[in-house]
Amino acid sequence: MIIPIRCFSCGKVVADLWERYLRLIGEDMSEGDAMDELGLNRYCCRRMIMTHVDLIEKLLRYNPAERATSKGEVARQRAEEDLNKRDGRDDA
Image 1 (cartoon, rainbow, N blue to C red):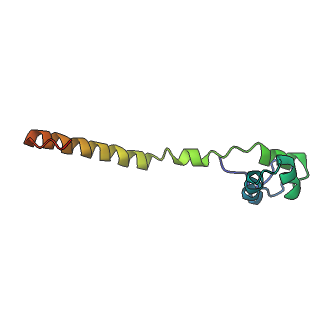
Image 2: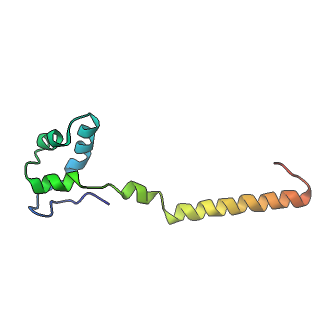
Image 3: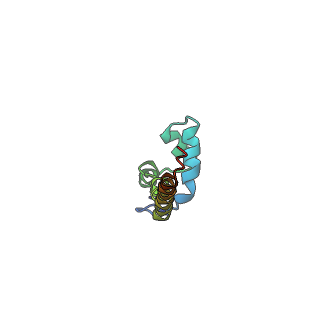
């Protein structure tokens, strides 16, 4: 979900390294070299960064408020289409 603030084992702060780690990986640097450059020498801290799955972006796509708005919009469009058909104005 959200990158943990500290390493679960040793307590080192690792959350501030996540963005830089992604940037280094994006520049075609190997994962090990990127973690070495960030100063992640302990295997417990390396584990925290390497195995993190960033699910927050996927979860934000399923926002119930947005889904309700889109359902309401679809219902409104269908109601307008029904009214147009009843009035004899088929715009489609």
